Length: 167
Image 1: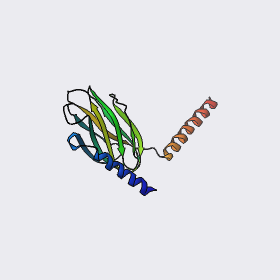
Image 2: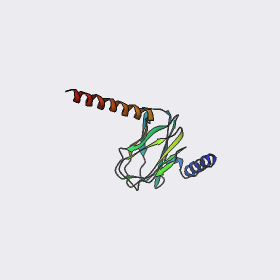
Image 3: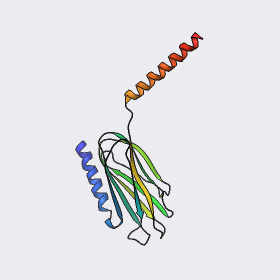
Image 4: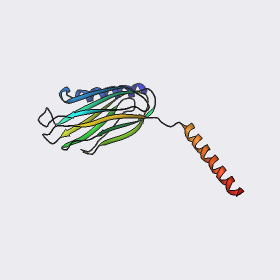
């Protein structure tokens, strides 16, 4: 079953990459990311007179453990709209932005592995511009953290109750 999922992921990556022309794709390799890392890249938005109605920008990154990962694109210029954002890797998913001009911001828990984020967008103006795309990584709280938090709150409650009865 795992081999089937891996092959499907590779097939999706290959099929998607065949649809991307290198003339309108910016690629940023962020390397290995760990807790507290936040990488951003300023992507250039070509003019409408460039080659094609759809454009793609890609961020590659690797995480070594399970983390909460935020994927974002902000400071979007006027006349510019995202139509799709894909995350390819061990925990693949995609979502449609429905021609969204608002910033893209999505957080999900991802397991260790190599990932590729593809931003697909269209341009409705002859003006050029830039947008900021990136990935940030945060720790996933362990169950022991929640147990310690509850134990601490219980002790504080016990102490407050005991103090109240003594007064």
